[in-house]
Amino acid sequence: MKGQYATDQGRVRNHNEDAGGIFKNNYNQYLSIVADGMGGHQAGDVASQMATSIIEEKWQETDQISKPEEAEMWLKATIEQVNKEIYEKSIKEESCKGMGTTVVTVIHTQDFVTVAHIGDSRCYLKNEAGFSQITEDHSLVNELVRSGQISNEDAEHHPRKNVLLKALGTEEVIYPDIQTVTWETDNMILLCSDGLSNKVSDSELQSFITGDESLVDKVQGLIALANERGGEDNISLVIVHHELLMEEGEKSC
Image (tube, rainbow, N blue to C red; front, side, top):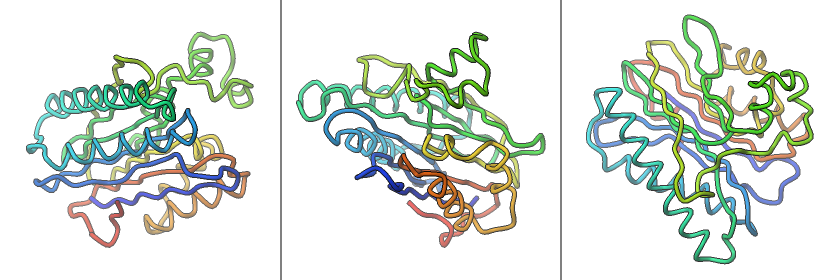
């Protein structure tokens, strides 16, 4: 496996509330994460950094994961703990009142990936069947689309497009969506915040992902495209390519 993480402030925001990375445990297993913070006076970055750092710390301490059930249990317990810590900080500190963050995180093994998410940061999978989004946004517009009240086209321009129905740290108890999918050589995973997915179509994401460029060029090209189209939001993404070995020059945490 090899992977690349990148984040960019964008062209409008005065600071970056996204966080993320690719992290290794003691058994050379990898976990990737993207978190998009919101709320409070510059507290979104506090929430996203808390989520990322707590998950990273716990991942580096974890035992080897060999079964999907183990990965799912680990992600559920870890995200619930992160939610508790962010929620408690938001209650205790006035400057952090109302803060929260999306999170999408993936455990990568040689045979499967396990994905957990809350909010509208996304996970896409490229495999022999094609390229597709495998997470469901926890957003108002996605629920309107799912219930048939608006079309996908309407959703792109809906005035409440950014309204989330779930975010990490905003409620005392919250449960992530978790799934496991088969993961084979030459498959790829893309994680991203909505600063990318709101500016770049799925077909364009697929074109970048399946191109011949290096992972560094892929992530930087996608960030540049989102910025060319306005860059109103922070932009963060992870690409992980299933290869036999992780090349240190390609990994960025």
